[in-house]
Amino acid sequence: MNSPALHELSIAQAGRLLRAGEIRAMDLAEDALSRIERSNPAIHAFVMVEADRAYADAARADDDLAAGIDRGPLHGIPYALKDIFDVAGMRTSCHSHLMCEHVAAADSGVVERLVRGGAVLLGKLATHEFALGGPSPELPFPPARNPWDPERFTGGSSSGSAAAVAAGLTRLALGSDTSGSIRGPACYCGVVGFKPTYGRVSRRGAFPLSYALDHCGPLTWTVEDAALALQVLAGHDPADIASASRPVPDYRNAITDDDLRGLRIAFPRRFWSEMQATTDEVLADLDRIADTLAGLGADIVDAQLPPFEWFSACGRLLMTAEGYAIHERMLREYGAKYGRYTYQRLVPGVAVSAADLTHAQRLRLQLSASLEREIFHRCDAMLCASCLTPAPRLDSFPADWPPTDASKLTIPFNVSGHPTLGVPSGFGRSGMPLGFQIVGRAFDEVTVLRIGHAYQRVMGYPDRRPPGIGDAFAEAAP
Image (tube, rainbow, N blue to C red; front, side, top):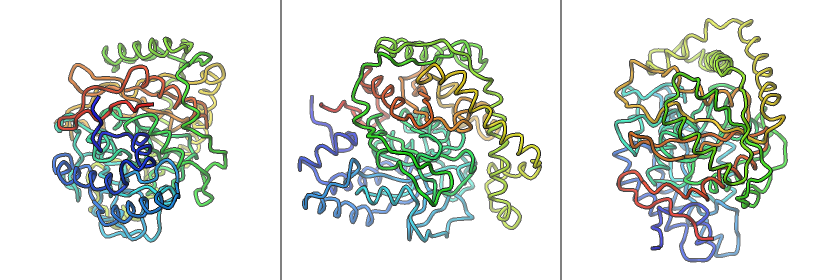
């Protein structure tokens, strides 16, 4: 097999070559910036490219390696940020006219960790306005396009993050996930998206949407790469009130075993088959995935889920109430400057009563406990669909925005806080990607990553790439 081009290297592959002296961090940065210059005008994944910062970071990473200093698994690896994360001295626009002139005074928690880890910042990525609105032309930047078909939706709100990884513009992107904003775009764009346990990754310096539901995590080409990214991102941050003071496992070395014997994976098949909006091809895909995991030794267990409608109603109310509270002053003073989708989704929060909010907060705890009782008391993980259908066409917007079912399969695990990994599984009849979720016990990211990695190892990485991307997912040599 021919050696992969630079942009085709996974994080794991690039790291090995960097440490062997076969490539430089500067090579990776220059290649990424060249690809961004050529491809970004078509997909609008990047809203800000920081070439000078990338060159400086790469030079520092190369100098450190030459001096025998290795800062970890992301040393010398290029990455990009959803444009809600603060970087000192850099604009954080949140894809909104209201924030276009806002320059951050300090690095966000995840950026601090990435800097200490020797990673190379390429720039900022498109999002929906304040991580909430929709693909709208009246915002300061055009909406990101799906590299598989520019006429189809990327998912949101980490739209640029998923598009950039799928298009080979970066091998690592950071996103946020309040109701599925990492996992939905990952599914629609055919990449890996990981929402760790609530509190595992700091949210400090990321513009909030819902204090109860916000999570931060990586989007990557492979599950192995997601494990390497989480190794750097995870850890306690006393400046984030929700940050958990828990030991951080050695994620990469914990997922090397492809033998899943001894693991019990819940598969609530009846739930999916009875959901009216679940398509036949999504259900058939889930059956195939369950068979694959069983072939790896896992015990696939029939299970019943608490009604997802309860999770969705609870999550929507919390997001509406907290989103309005966060934006109340700006809505009153500058309401006309919001995009129409964002405004329409925020304003109903004014009508949420204290009683409604109290009931939702209590229900959140009850629903989390119900998942523990019904699923994780007897199983190690759960298999779920990521999306009800492949990526819809953009011409379905704005009339259908927001799609009522868009977050039905993802928001339950924001409400419960359980770690959830989105993995690409193939392609539907439309030629667009399909994907699935693996949900684990709280703070057991290792099992979730182990299952996803084993699946990718046995199935191989997809052999179809977006147009012009090439054989970007070539499997790493051992």
